[in-house]
Structures are given as C-alpha cells and as structure tokens.
Amino acid sequence: MSWLIPDDEDDDVPYGEYADHAVRQRPNPKANRPRTKRRPEHSDAVIGMVTGVDRGRYAALIAAGADPEDPDEREITAARARELRNTPIVIGDRAQLVGDTSGAEGSLARIVGIEDRRTLLRRSADDSDRVERVMVANADQMLIVVAAANPEPRVRLVDRYLVAAYDAGISPLICITKTDLADPEPFLANFAALEVPVFRSQPGDWEDDSPGGVLARIRAALAGKTTVFVGHSGVGKSTLINALVPEAERATGHVNAVTGRGRHTSSSSVALRARTPGSASGDSGWVIDTPGVRSFGLGHVTSEGILRGFTDLAPLLDECPRGCTHLDDAPDCELDAAIADGRLDATGAGRVESLRRLLH
Image 1: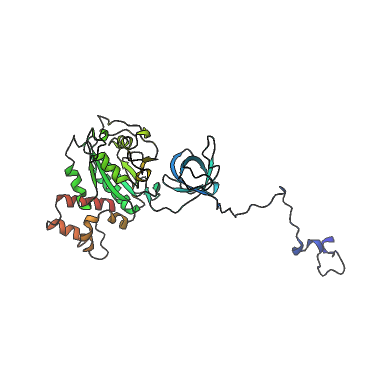
Image 2: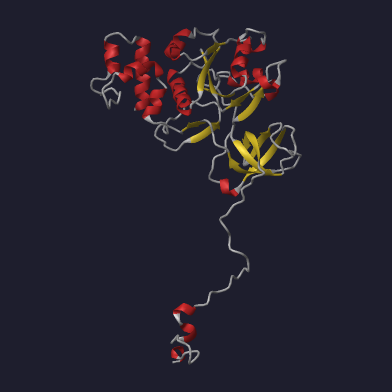
C-alpha cells in the first residue's frame, strides 16, 4: 500500500504526503485577496444635515465653512453606504459625507456614518408594537398643531404627542387653529398645568406678519431651533408651514364633510429653513414637516417615560405607595384619593384617565 511508504527513508514522518500535518490547501480559484473587515476611517468626511429622504436618496445641506476645500453652503444628494444598510437615516441627522460633495448637477455623495444624536423622536405603529419607527433626529422642539373644530381636537392624541416629546427630551409647544369655529379654552384646560406655550390662531392670521401677531410670535419661538411639526390631518399644519416658509409650497387639503377627517397632503418628512423677514440668517430656524397621522403608537415607551408626560400629576404620584402601578385596581393609589377628596377637578380626573389608558 503506497500510502504507507515514506517519501524519504530519513524522514521521521511515517505516512509521507498523506500525513495529517502535510495537507495542502487548494489555491484561491479567483486569485484575489480575501475580503477584509477593516474599513477606512473617512477622516476627510464632511458633515451635512439630512433635509430630505426620497427612495434611497438623501438630500443634505453642508453648512458654510463645514468643508475647508469649499467653504460655501450647498445642497447635495447622497446614497447610503453598504455598511449603514441596517442603520436608519432620518431627517435632522448629521451625516458624514464622502465622495462628490460638490453639489453639482448629477453628482452623488455617499453617507458613511451618522454623528451622535442629541434627541430622537420615535413612534410605533400601535401600542402593542415594540418596533420603533425613528421619525426625526436632533430636534429641539415639537409644535403640536390641533384645530379647535373641524376636525375636533383629540385630548388623547395630544397626550401621546406630549409623552413622545418628553421621552425624547424635546420641548413641546401647542398651536390651536380655527378658533373662530369653537372656543379652544375647554380643550386647552387639559394641559394648563403643564405650562406648555400655546399659540391661538384663526383664518387671516397667517397673512398678517406684523410684529406682535401670532405668526410673528411663532417665528420668534422657532428662531435658532429645530422644530418638528406634528398634527392630525386637516388641522392646517401645511398652511402654517407655507406661511413660515413661502417657498416650501407644501400641498394643503380640506376636511371631509361626511367623515370629519382631513386628507393626507404631506406624504414625506422634509426639513425647511424658516427665516425671519429682514433679519440676519442667524435668526433662522428649521421646521420639519411630518405627514399627518391619526394615531401615534407608544409601544416603545416605558411606564417611566409615560409618567414624564404627566408632570402636572407628579406631586400625587410621589405620594403613592412604593411599587404602585397607578392603574384602576392599584390599592391605595393617591390618584384615586385626590379625585375622591376634590383635590383633582373634572379636568384633573380626565388627566388621570388619560394616564391610565396609556399605562394599560
């Protein structure tokens, strides 16, 4: 048997070329180098703000002075690098850009990284869905736009917006439109204890940009900030944005007379720069328009995150027994005691009901 014959009589290996330690490796048939997991550092990447997302292409704005080779401000189009295929890239992200960042027609840069996010606004499809949908990054404020009527304001939906804002570390604002159709004060009483800034408007206010007017006051609140606009379809969110950013030309719709629901006009999120007329560019802010929604899931928010949205009830919650769930069947819950002895009026009792619905 030839496999037992050594190759060389002086060789100490008894089984020759068929010995285990002498196995020959098959050469690489493609004759190329194996793929490495090392990635370039992209130390020359330029930072730009993502202002739009459309079918795998990202619009980004490179601020003046951000690129030493080209100090001018410019808008570019970019694609996502393969290594970021599982990383969500959203409006407001500070993206690391390489490749052709000239912004010339037909040019395409590449997003190779995302800077750390200061804030992150998220929602889920519904309360049972634990998968979060990242909406906006690095926002400072949330402007909740509601109508006093047509469509009717929904306390529960605003509660959800507030919880999402506080959970994300974003300051909330409220703008209530169509105040000529109904008195907004009973609705706003639900949130009075939160001390959230409120802007009241009616038809004609968006055409009046005089000092002291509601539009001028909203501009002042947005100056130097990144503000995400949220609201039910048909409340006038796009109309307000067109007043703040006339060149935006966001589509506007109407409310269905039969269903009382608004028609979706904004189909995607977009960041727009809102400048104060006649002021320096430093006074400008960013507004982020989001599609109108009829529900806002909080499946990703913990119980502690929900409680942060009810700061008006915090003194009572602190008096609850240790481990209290604050639900209807919770023994010795201070919320029930406050309703029974009159410390909470009808509006306060409604806030407790909203809290418990969200906790459920």
